[in-house]
Length: 509
Image 1 (spheres, rainbow, N blue to C red):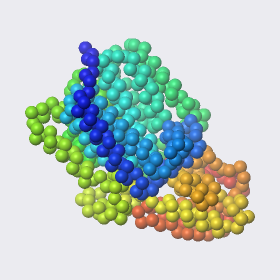
Image 2 (cartoon, helix red, strand yellow):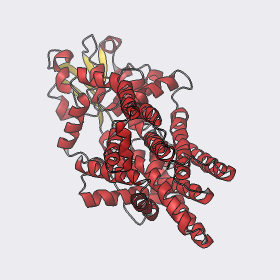
Image 3 (cartoon, helix red, strand yellow):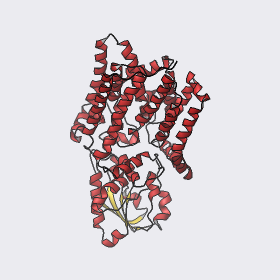
Image 4 (cartoon, helix red, strand yellow):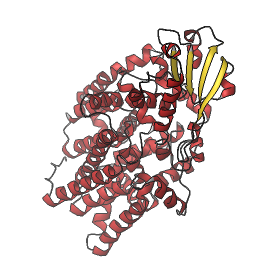
């Protein structure tokens, strides 16, 4: 029999708001410390090319970037305020889910502390990317499903459709969670929803919201599918067996959180009323393993398991005050000690000294990341200002006649995005690149004669130019290793025109 939700205790609401405010404050401490992450530069470039889709992501993040550009601006503080707010909102939603599952004040606080203790979410909520919204959107769907179970109000499927549609405009991986929920539905009494119209109308709403992006992909032959195929074929990502993938979940969330979220999974599977959500986790995990997804792709589901684990623990520890206090300490202390790994609260020199004292090696998701001195989410923050300054010097070394017919090329979207964002103060034009969606934004409708190229090498460019000069060598000890290389000035091309070779410059991986 459906049960109406009981109101939030005032003390629980105050605790959740306090934890959310703490998360926001900590994230803002590191908001302006390093530099723009390479992906952030790409998304901000996309904001200057608003469209219904892009090669490797849906349009929502570009729209958010466009709104920032036309309001607060796109400073590091501005973009990271958005991601920090998304993190604070996820804390609140985690508390709401715990309440729906039956938690009282302590259980709600424990669920939010579990989310705070998980390392992956700090990175999500520091960077300006689709990932900052992923846990928020996944948990909004979970919260709606819980309300459906608790109240029996089938009209809530309409809101499910709205959130699912917005989620598809943010990142396609939310479809895996939606699929997992529908599969789980078939194995529980909630499948009765399939006999009513509301779930189908909700699905239609989701499809309608996603439709413009689906049309964009279809008209171009599904570039996202080509991109994913290329990534798998390149061997770029670190691959996992089922066991190592599950172990990577434990490490990604910090091992001390494992009893809480795994206990939450067991509690959901044991609880007939909420079993649907436990089955959904298992289905999503299986799909991620089968699809060889990166370990953090499944991260957005874990606030649900933290909430479920908190409910189970609260009931067990009802008369065990020592256990309640110990649980909070066990969750909070390791994360506090590890905070510099996931939020840039230290100057980089101090961070490197701190990292050298860690008793373990930090995990990587792509093979190239292992060569960097610091984690990838820090490494790709460094070197952009120096790179753009050197490109500007190379640009100004050209004669006025050469500059009139010169182009700047970045081999990857980070380099191109850095020139687009940081270059105007030097008087630089927008960069060209064949990487990801940049390929759709070029070539220009005029023919360049001189090229300034970043991210390539002398021998590679001698196939395309008779005169290749190294203007400067880029090196940053903390930066991504692939950004250490020359700034080239290339003249006397050997190809007929840029438009002729542009199809071969496409690099989607």
